[in-house]
Figure 1 (cartoon, protein in one colour):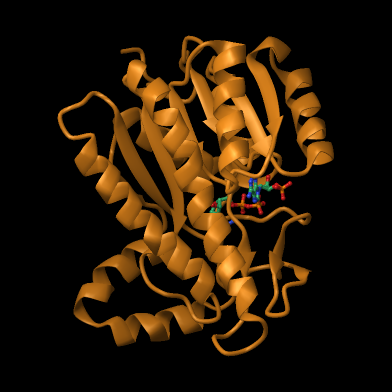
Figure 2 (spheres, helix red, strand yellow; figure 1 turned 120 degrees about the vertical axis):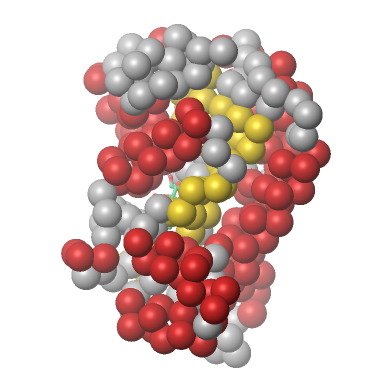
Length: 274
Ligand SMILES: NC(=O)c1ccc[n+]([C@@H]2O[C@H](COP(=O)([O-])OP(=O)(O)OC[C@H]3O[C@@H](n4cnc5c(N)ncnc54)[C@H](OP(=O)(O)O)[C@@H]3O)[C@@H](O)[C@H]2O)c1
């Protein structure tokens, strides 16, 4: 089948749903898919920013290849709405990129535990529900589900336990789905994305449940959104199950098997996670 064979090569109108694509890595993924001749359904909860991203991309690419659906993918009916909207508009789904997530910062035992619960809920159910409803359609196209995880999906990060818990749960989900899809032409992958340049508009939950700015990271620790998106699309093209993006991610992954305590030390030194 005519899968993406390079980000500058035609996707022949394949239909991608990218959750959480009004900004950040999701928006860059949308841009690269459109640039390669694919069609995209954008998604985020805030209609105003979603519309402005839609309009921005429609001014760069063929507007007929772009749709937008405002909705919270951690709510089953809204996730189903995203899938139904895509099928109604484009008639098929080739790839679902589960990118939407919320960040959180705060130590265990500090602040409101309901905030932990909310982060876990959004980050897990926001992958479960769209995948659930998309599977029959993706299966028809022998397509692909891609889950965006993080360093936090490889090793629990200090002050990011809710986020780490949710991202690790996605590994279990991806493995179960891979086993269920064994012998079919449809496949799943999970990307352990490294620290990537954040947009100034990005917010995360603090311990009290208030949204706060995400502090800037040391430049040397961060990669660009373009590079991260390119790697995710390459993984989709190659149908690889697992991709660990950064050197720090590879270090954590390999060191974890030998000395998890040393990983704690490395991550504490890296500072300012997410
Ligand atoms: N940036 C990094 O360094 C980094 C590192 C590792 C992994 N990641 C992962 O990469 C992905 C994207 O990160 P990012 O930095 O680009 O994030 P971001 O800038 O915060 O963007 C998140 C996007 O998701 C949307 N969103 C959040 N909750 C949603 C929900 N329940 N339903 C639908 N849309 C929702 C947001 O819009 P609304 O708020 O309007 O809904 C926004 O469009 C996430 O899965 C993140 O965990 C990022």
